[in-house]
Image (cartoon, rainbow, N blue to C red):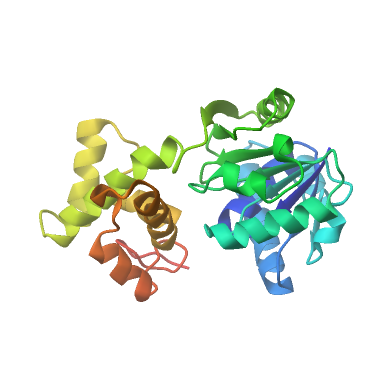
Length: 281
């Protein structure tokens, strides 16, 4: 199957990685050659890790790389059967992208969004194919995490849902359905926890390591909320919280001051080298 992936950031390159690994032809599109080359380098490094752990063979690695085409032109998506958008959590930006995809892609193509919080119904309304618009929310890191949160819009057809569930199974993922609602299930529950952990840190209740250790040891979480915020990206967490706050008008979703401050200082977590913890780039 020909797959289009729009956005070559952390999520986009992870999605391209997984589809290419399962022998799909992937066209990965972004706005600059540098972003695309960095993305391909990341994919190669992650495939190398899988090779060293004997998860894949050298032959599979080589095939995966050959399955990926880099481009800055969304017109190359025309023959794709599925296009997955994985750009910044910005409704206006995503809406314009879906309008453009609708005009460029063939009429039978499914348009999916990897959005963490934005309404699938709103994206569908910007197209002439609302029955073929769906949320396909992968978890980070995409090559490792099994869940794909499948978000149905009001007009998403059963055929579209079934197709996306089958594709997810083919990627050795576990698709779980939910209806369109701000933050869906995953981030509507996760983001308030991260936000509350940030409040604990900001108020000096405990340091980051202690907060995370308590949640890991006491609640059975594999990763503490502040470490997870660093992995997701502090800026992404703020974007999602702002969507939730705007839609629900509930103070529990208002981003903690420390998150806003960290974003302004470019302390975005693992991708910037510093967040609640420090990292080597």
